[in-house]
Structures are given as C-alpha cells and as structure tokens.
Amino acid sequence: MRGEYVGLAVAFLLVATANGGEELGGSSKLSGIIIPGFASTQLRAWSILDCPYSPLDFNPLDLVWLDTTKLLSAVNCWLKCMLLDPYNQTDHPECKSRPDTGLSAIAELDPGYITGPLSSVWKEWVKWCIEFGVEAHAIIAVPYDWRLQPSKLEERDLYFHKLKLTFETALKHRGGPSIVFAHSLGNNVFRYFLEWLKLEVAPKMYNQWLDNHIHAYFAVGSPFLGSSEAVKATLSGVTFGLPISEGTARLMSSSFGSSLWMMPFSKYCRADTVYSRHLSGRSRKGHHVFHCDEHEFQVNHSGWPTNIVNIEIPANKGYEAYPSFPEIVQTNSSDRECGLPTVLSFSAREVADGKFFKAIKDYDPDSQRLLHVLKNSYHGDPVLNPLTPWERPPLKNIFCIYGIELKTEVGYYFAPSGKPYPDNWIITDVIYEAEGSLRSRSGNLIEGNPSAASGDETVPYHSLSWCKNWLGPRVNVTRAPQSEHNGEDVQMHMNVEHQHGEDIITNMTRSKKVKYITYFEDSESIPGRRTAVWELDKANHRNIVRSPVLMRELWLEMWHDSQPDKKSQFVTKEKRGPLRDADCYWDYGKARCAWSAHCEYRYVFGDVHLGQSCRLRNTSADLLLHYV
Image (cartoon, rainbow, N blue to C red; front, side, top):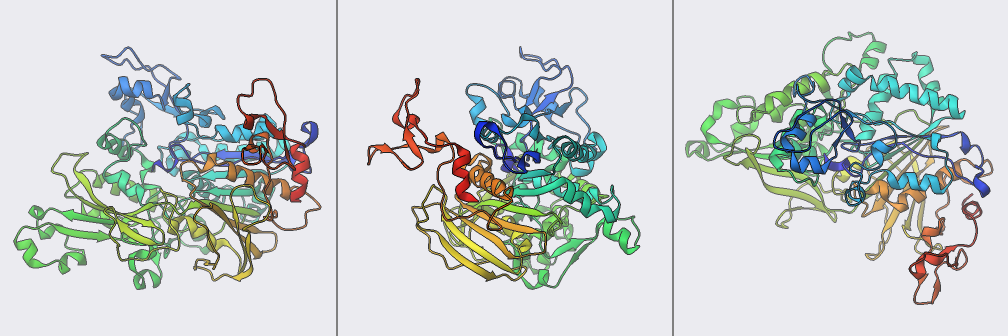
C-alpha cells in the first residue's frame, strides 16, 4: 500500500526545551523511537550487479529504494534488487538489498536537489526537534525491511529482538521511557512487537516492562482494520507515483510477503494467539482459527461500507470451478448457459480468510502464492494473526491520530483484461466514500453502510476510527480550527457517553472554509491509562507526518505532560498561537506582523520578503507557559 511511501511511520520525539537549550521538567529523560511505514525506509544493495546496456551498475551500499536514476536507466537490474522469492522471501540470486540504518534512512528516500523534497518523509520532524533543542541521541529510528511479513522480520533480521534492545538501551542512556510514534504499517509492526514481547518476558513482568520502557504511543494513520487499497495493489498494482507500469508494480507487490499485512478484515472475527492458548492450557500447535461472532452474519459487508471486491469470472471455466460458494448457486442459470461472466462479491472477512483468492485461483496464477503466504505467514503465524482486530494495548498513554474528509477508495470492480499476467485484471469501477455517502467513479450513489466521515485518501474511516473503541465510557469532545486562533470557533461537549463498538457522533457545526481538528479525550478511563483520538480535516495519509499542525499538537501535548503543575489531563485547546519564527507571517491587511502580541518585525540580512522578517518576540519556552 502506498499509504506510506511518503508518509509513513512511527515513533517519536519528546523533550521540550527552554531558554538557552535547557530542557524543561522531566522530559529530558524521554527518548523518541520512530518506526517508519511501508516503503518509507531506504534499501541499499548488498551485492555487485553488472547491468548490461547501462552505465549504471549496483555496488554494495548503493541506494536501491529509492534511486530514480537507476530505476529509469536500468529497470530490470533495479527489479532484481527489489524482488523477493514469493514463497520463501529469499533474495534474487544476483542481487540482495537490506534496509539502511539511522535517521538518514527515513529522512529522504531519494536525496537530491529535486528528488529530495519529493521523497521527504521524516525530514521535517528532525528539523522540529533541532529547532526545539532536542539532543541527537534522543531520537532513534528503527528502520526495517518493509517487504517482509512479520515472522520473516524476526527470522532473517532479528528485528524484534533488536527493537527490544533499542528500548532497553534508550532507558539506560536517557534514564526514562520512550515515546513511540507510528505511521501506517509502522503501527502493525509495533502491534506485532507487543505480542511477540509477551513470549519474551515473564507474564507477571510484561506490564511492568511496558510501563518502564514506553511512556506514550502515537498511532498516526494506522490501518487498524486494513485498507482496501491493499487489494488493489495485489490484483492490479499501485505504482507509488513511480515511472513504472501497474503490471510491474503488481510483480513487486506479489513478491513481498508484507503485501497481505494490510488486507482489510472484519472487526467481528478474532483468532487465538500463542499467548492466550498457552495461558488456557491449549495446544500451541496448529493455525489460528477465525472465530466470528453473530454480528458478522447479521450486518452487511462485515461492517465495512461495502463489499471490498466485485469481480467478473469468465464463463469458459465452467460452474464446477466454484462448488463451495453460495453466490454461484444464486447466479442466474441462463447467464451460464449463454456464456455470460459471473460476478462474485467478497466482504472483508472473505478477503482475510482466503475465500476470495480460492475463488479466483483458476483464473489468476498469483492466487496460489497468495494463499500459501496467507496460510503460513498470517493465519499460521507463530505469534499473532495480524488480520484480526486490535484491542487497546496496556500502555499508559495512547494517542490515535488520522486524517478525515478526503475521498477514499473502499471497494473495487475487477474484470479480466484479456492480457497475460501480471496485467490480467483491469479495474472497471471504484467505490469511494466521501461526504457521508458512497459513490462510484462516475459519481453515482451506491447503497451500503457509509461512515459518518470519509478516510484519509488511502485508509477508509471505518479502519482508521477503530481506535475509538479504546476510549473510556465518557469522553470529552473538542473541535477547534487547525490554524492559530484565540478561542473563536472552539466547540466543546463534555462527558459524552461512549458505547463500546459504536462511533461517537457529536452535533457540532462546521464551516466549509475552515479545517478543524476534533479531539476525543478520555473523561473517565482506566486508572493510570489515558486515551485520545485526534481527527484532522483534509490530512492526507501520505503527508500527515509532515503536517505542521500535527507536529505542533504533539509537541504541546508532550510538553504539557512533562509539567508537574499541569492543571488538566490533556493540554488546553482554548487557543493556539505561534511557537516558532516560521509560524509568524506578515498581515498585509494591517500592514504589520500577524499575532502582534507574539510576533514582531525584525529584519535579518538575507530576508527576501516581509513574512521572513516576522519573528517571535519571546522564546518558545515563554510561549509554552500558556499551555500548562
């Protein structure tokens, strides 16, 4: 899923600073751990590969993901370094790639004067940290090979062992716990780590280990229930905006074990974990079996807005290809006699449990591989079946953050293209969620279960908002403008009752000209535990980690959390003013710097326009005192 190529994923910062770079409160002990998302880590060659008919070869440590120059000039060589064996996830015989390390691996994927800004991922985060005086050793990136399924990450790279050591080293070095910031697939990685950790530490020590090592978890753009776009990538390919064909993109996706990690699934179906079976005394052998409650069969589309896949099956294979599917029985017999194609529809549950891939295995050569990976690496994963809903982890502070109100794909219509694999399917129509309704690509209204809002252009709202189930029985809801404000247009609903499994719908006004951020924060919660959900209007999945609004809110929340004399559980939403020189600008209507109480005109040699000469009157530390 491209949901992360340029926007992707995870753990972060800490530590507000005061005058002269002196850190405030106890926040100087915190570390930030960033777990990036899908396609958001550089991959480097670990082979010598001679590329015929091209002056560009691959040598050890050469950039593979992402080097657009070599992609354009030697695409076949580049693919050898990118592709994995679809069954055992081993490297191509002629070339292997491995993830880079450190912050540079996630800052820009393709550094360069032109390509750098276009492939920037975490660079803006690093700039914010430097501007606020965060020490270099306080921010730790933990890149991983995003092509691999979770079990292979541990088997080949010992990734989760290394991640555990990273938390323990940060605690010893800084003297305090870490803040985890995950974006998109990075959240899936962190979830697997928490489950894996249960098998590494004594059961009685598990919660204590989490309390000692993790202060807060920020889940940004997390596909809690998967993403419809993962199906699109599997059947037709998603190009990530690269100059490659969709068929080539599908070949890449098909070779990655992680391609199924973000498949959509039902919130009503669960599976036993090794940990739960061990505590119950049941056998640790065998696959995790799905258990679906009665709601799965009482609601349409597994609770999703619509069926994920609608696919035309050629008639020339005959009816006998699908003896186990009731949809076939219901198909008009005259259609079969006339040779008309059969259209099959599949819900999220039928995608996640493999029924969809079984249905098309006679028509798609990749389905057998997908079934193999699904059975062995997901349903039979030794630690966790990731295609099951996630209950709130026992962490002290959790902040779930995502964008809303963007047109997002939720379902697809596929048909045979008449071409050979990998171009054997074409998308004939797409179902979008937008403005509280479902529409086809042509704009026609579609019946279904539209959500109260739409998603972030990559992950549907139904999946993003699952974390609202982690909130307590009473919730405080605040809606405020994303831009700086003095309290105007701030709306609050206190102690709103929250029923588990149901969305929180508030009757708040919304101006079409204003982008809002809506905060859902625990009013009542488990003692020692806090949960908050932030919904950012028009925040794109891929770019949300570069959003100045998100960085400002995270910074204020962490700074407020570090203050011993804070007056509330969460930082106040009553106003938002500038915190950096970059937040000041020239107000041409008043012929002065905007926010004159906080900003002033102060020219510095090199300023090329009036806005650049608007700077803060006071230090950021003085301004932060307003948010205690």
